[in-house]
Amino acid sequence: MSLVQRGRWVTLVGLALLAGVYVRALVFTPVELHQGPAQKIFYVHVPAAWSAMLAMGLVGVASILYLLVKDARYDRFAAASAEVGTAFSLVMLTTGPIWAKPIWGTWWTWDARLTLTLFLFFLFLGYLLLRGAVTDVGLRARYSAVLGICGLVLLPFIHLSVYLFRTLHPMPIVLKPSAPSLPGVMLATLLFSVGVFTLLYVGFVMQRYGIGDRGEGGGTHA
Amino acid sequence: MADLFRHAWAIARKDLVLEFRTRTAIMSAAVFTALVLVVFNFGRDPTAIPTLTIAPSILWVTFSFAGMLALNRAFQLELENSALDGLLLAPISRFSLYLGKLAANLVFVATVETIGLLLFALFFDVPLQRIVGPLVGVIALATVGFIAVGTLFSAMVIRTRFAELMLPVLLLPFLIPPLVWAVQATGQLFAARPLSEVAGALKLLAAYDIVFVTLATLLFPATVDQ
Image (cartoon, rainbow over all chains, first blue to last red; front, side):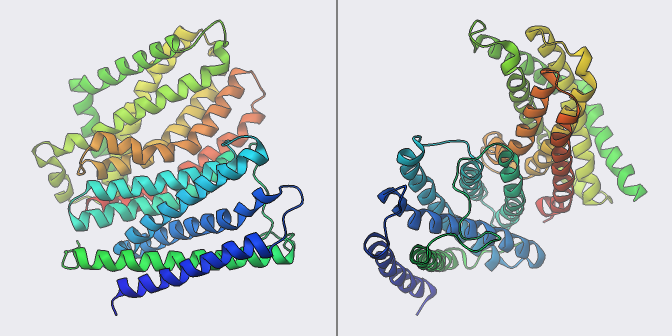
């Protein structure tokens, strides 16, 4: 079975489990006291953000590895991860405003985390545009690796640059120094969803990587 | 180490001599800066918004555009007659080549920014005498980080399609942190706040410069080596 086919199976399992996430979030998880049903979007928004961040982190790691060992597979993986990451950040950027309108009363605000994720999206777009604008395979791999590394280093700075202002975004409730303040049932649903989104990321990247393998398998890398 | 900077200086000197003998690019960049300032003057309602409120934004948007314009030309120069290949064959390290290009870009942008700052003070009647020292510090720190990344990227985009458009698309996200801190610091200076309030932004700008000058120097060889 080829990588693309295996990736397709992983994705199918992921999609089936995603249906499970919806059922669990809507039926078996209690409605949040203050936010009401709008809070349900949390179970899609946060895992999508997680997958997008994971994708960017792995683009950066693969870029460093590519420049160190010049193995074309790392470049192909980075390209696949960037494309999938773009899709996940789009999910994150659309679900966020849908939640924000009833809760904050505004679709968009220049809060630290919103700005960070918007620039995550811009970095993904720039990365893909750069790949599209270079025809030579080896040159493209090196250029995009340089951009991937710079992008990874930039994100903490963007976060820092807006963090100093007042922030509207809900504070972390799971990953924080003290114990998670999310009730157990909700936390279980969230973690289940994060797992499913990670599985979907893996499935998508496997397929995209497999297609890239077919398309440019014989390419020479400088 | 001494060779590194000697060679970098040779590269920078070559670029600057070329630049100040022809003067086409520097003149165009200066005129462009003046025109952007004029556009800003007519792009606002002076009776509704006091000048000082938007002065930091005017200054920094103008500098961002001018810097971007300057960066496009750094490696474009070397494409003619395959001059870049000659540079790469020269027995100097890639780090010297990058640092030389960076130094030349900084001098070029600093010249344009000086002209821009004077025109800005003239057009918008901003009293600069009192704060010129700290303001130059803010401008210098913000420009170094921005131009460091820009020099790295301009070496890449010259060999892509739509190079003039690609550079801003890749570079603008990297402009955000220095821009945020520079606008903040400039605003505080214009409002005659004590210098201690600006120190935080200056430290962050310096951190950004150190990180990105180092990173860009290390990554530059990957953009030119075959």
